[in-house]
Each structure stands twice: as structure tokens, then as C-alpha cells.
Picture 1 (cartoon, rainbow, N blue to C red):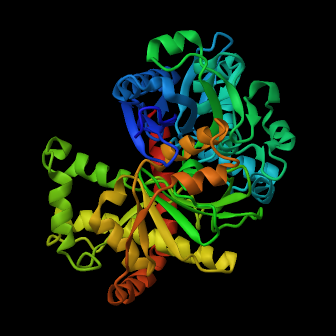
Picture 2 (cartoon, rainbow, N blue to C red):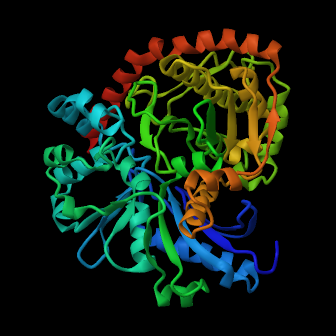
Length: 515
């Protein structure tokens, strides 16, 4: 990097941590900072965070990034934020939380999904918001709070996403965000690019209690002097509108053509393709694209790499205290045949989004025997996530009417040779591994680069900054075997649906009885 090379910062405030990364005009990361974000699980199905922790984590990450630039922070020309989606915060007139934020993993609003879908109409919800009724959008958490914590509802001056909260802290002024941070809240008219008056009226929410929406790349403000002094960032640094980490990740992989699918092998497994056309379908959820033009058709498995961490934490001796645990399990799992010697898992530990849209779906272990080891279970978890992704990709291809040529893989799971080869083999498609797994931060950096005037469009920024990829080619012999296994996997959900629903109802009854 030249001594006077201009820089932008992509700040990725994800579910578990914040990453602040400085990028060059060619997409080279030159410095970064990281900090964890705590999350609480106070009762079954409740996942919460304190917005103050979003801020403290962001400040720590930004400060570390500046320190690692070693005196070159004066070349930073812009900042944009990628953030965890569908997480909903509540702030009062003093900009303090009126109640803990509900994280996108939260499951408490199942009843509200059922009741609102019946009263407003599931098809109407899907048509307006691009999303079928489901646990993930913040829509149903608005309703839950109004019905179950009226005091917090009344005391909430603004219902915030992570981006709008951080922008307010960074720049002062009103709460404001970008389209791609607003639309995951599930109350946006996706064709008009504004808060849906029809939806707001139905849930009893005034637009004045929501952040101001802006197109990607809009200058939202400049850095407060106090923040500049605390972090070492340049005074009056412009902050530009970005938003949802999924859309930013798609942009970071230059997912700006219809036949390229990004896939984020992260806490959740998220994959999507770009389209110029607004369409809604049960095979995906429709989102506004990060480049400000067109849409993303995205599918999502809520419990992705989270499951491997869960398994290691709960059932493997010493858990993650053993620094080599994942390397050891991966090596052992690689030697196990396709199908994990008769073990098949349904990975719906947090319900199912596309294609089933069933918040009562659950995890299922099928075929477990005393001969299976922890390595079998580890492999079966990766296989289940992979098979589910291949199923959803095939469904999407059928619905859009053309094939997806390849995946571009990002996220921590892209570092796994077993997983990326398995995805290539099971899908029969090349898996291009990006030079950076931090595609969400890169996507935010691309938007900041456009805002700073480096490029004429966000798409041009993506083409210049996305970097090279390394392709993992499928093994056609293994693809045939995975096709057979996929046929079995497709039957699993339908074979266990009634039982899972009955067990959810039973558990709910016992919880009420013992309350």
C-alpha cells in the first residue's frame, strides 16, 4: 500500500462481534479491529442484547483498527456500516434502551405470526414485504412488545435497527438508516422503497417512531468530535448509508449478475442471487439490493455454523477449550463416507424458513446408533446444512427459470476444506472461495468508497474491489451419490412435521403448567 493511499472503513456489526476493517480502492484490507458483542438467553426462545454493547463493541473495534493503521488514519475518507439484520432495539426519549433489544434469533413471537397472518393476510404480507410470515422479520416482535410489554412499547420513542443506533451515536442528529437496513424489519413496501403505511396502520405504529430511510451510499452525517477524539478517526469523517450484513456480503462478492450466488457459511447459512425484477416466491425472501438497484432473492437456514459450535460446546469433551477441536473433528469427519454411515440430521433447530416457512419445525436426528461417534455427528451436521442448501438452490433455480452457474463462498465455514468441497460435490457447481471471508465489511467498504467519490456507482465499486477467487470444482462421482442422499433428505421434513408440531405444543403446555 502506498503511503498516501486513500482508505475507507467497513464496520460490520454482526450478531456476535464487530469488525472494523480499512480497505484500499482495490479491496485490500490493511488494518482491522475486533470486539465481541454479548448476547443473553434469559429464557427459552428469548435472545436479547443491550444496544449499549453494540456501541461499546463498535468503539473498541474502530479504535483498534485506527491503532493498527499506525499513523495513516488521516487517509480514511468514509465509513459505512454492515449490521445484523432483523434485530430490533427500543430507545426512549433519552436515547436509552426502554427494554433489551430482541435479536433476530428470538423465537417468542410465534403466536403473533399466526394471528397477524390470519388478520392481515399471509399473501398481503408476502406481497408488500417480500417475506412470507416467519420468525425472522422484526414485524412480529413489534406486535409481541405491544401485546406483552405495553410500558416498554409506550416508552419507546424510536424502534431502531443496529445501523440507525450506531449512526446516531457516531454522528448525532435523528435516527436514520439505509434501505438495506430498514427492509429486514418487515414493514417496508419493497416496490415503493418506503415504510408501508398499510403495515404500520395494521400494527398500530406511527412512522415518526421509525428511523429515516435512505438509499445506499447516502451521506448520513459526519463524525462527532467526541467520537473522533475517542477512536482516533479523522474529524468530520462522512458516514454513508449501508445496512444489512447479508446484502452487504452479496455486494462484497460482486453478486451483481443473475447467475452468481453468494453463500455465507456463517452463524446462519445465507445465499442469494441478484435480479433487476421484484418477485416474491416461497422459495426465497426478497430484499433490496445493496447497490441500490434491483433486488436480492435470498434463502436462509437460521441454524448454520451455529450448530457445529453448539455441538462442540454441549457434547464434545473440553469443548472449545481444546484449541484443536475443530481441526480434529474435521479430519476425522473427512474419512467418513457420504451419508455419515446411516446418520441423517434435519438442521431446523430454530425453525425452517424457505421452502417450508414453518416456525415450529425442529432438529431431527435419524438413524443414530451406538456405533456413531462425535465425528459422525459432526459430519452429519455439515451434510444436513449442505443438503438443505442444495435443495433450496434447486427450488430457486426452478422458480426463476434459469440455472445458477456457481457459488461464491464467504464466512467462517468457507475456511473448511471439508465443507466447501462438500458443497461443490453435493450441488454439482463450482464453489469460488473469496480472498476475504469478511465480505460484509467489504460490501460496506464498497458503499463507503462510492460515497467518498472513488467510483461512479456502487456496482463499479464492487467490480473494482471484490478481488480474486479460488474455485473448488465438484467431483461428479460424489455428486451422483449426494443426489441419492438428497432424495432421502427431502422426505425428512414431511415425515416429521406432525410429530414436531405436537412436541412444540406439548412443551408449551408444560411450560404454562409449571409457570
